[in-house]
Image (cartoon, rainbow, N blue to C red; front, side, top):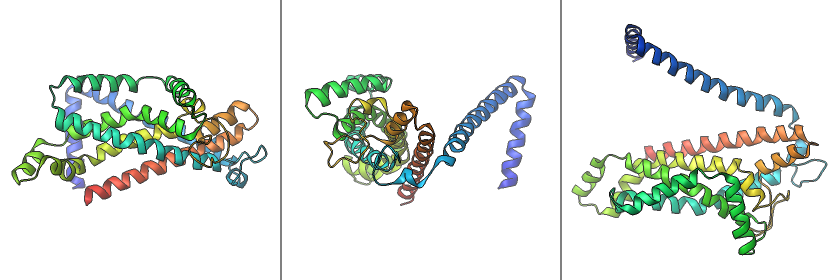
Length: 288
């Protein structure tokens, strides 16, 4: 297999060299890929080099104070925020995509309106969502600065992302899968949940991973809705800061820049672990 792959690659390379324009495009694409990889490697290396030397046991103490500036409450608040936001946006986004793809039909005007609206909402800056969340959830509904207000705001932010990625994943499932299921006597609902959805799981989880990354890294929207109090709230109506907000506050104060760099390392590791766990779950579901 290795010999076949090596021969195929050499044949393609010879073809690129025989055609100057194809060789030029191959060179441009290769350089772009190398630059992308180099930038990613530089960012990860820079964060690790700046942050790892400042990781101390005091940063992981249970309670935050001005002496230890512990990030443990922020880590727990981040997990809670991710859970609450996805609990609201995940099912709504996935079921909305199922309706648009499996029931509404491609020529439906409602589908076009929803797609344009979702794409528009995806491009709105997070600060606008934060202002909306503050005006509506915090002030109009009287929730105050709370985890629930932040979770609802982030759910609105991530809903278009999950819906659009799920829609693309469902449309990528071959029509023959549906036709084969119908031919065997399965109904519409059974075909969707037993055939279509399992086949689209990798694409759906890709959207969920992107949504998790946006929730974990969000600061502007949460500062206006969840607040910046550095403790674990007793309930969802309490205020608390996530890890990204914690890092921003430490860096903005200018007194704990090294601790902010250490927080960046933990944030990076958390995102990597979440992505790895999601990929593992996707593989397990596909194999089963």
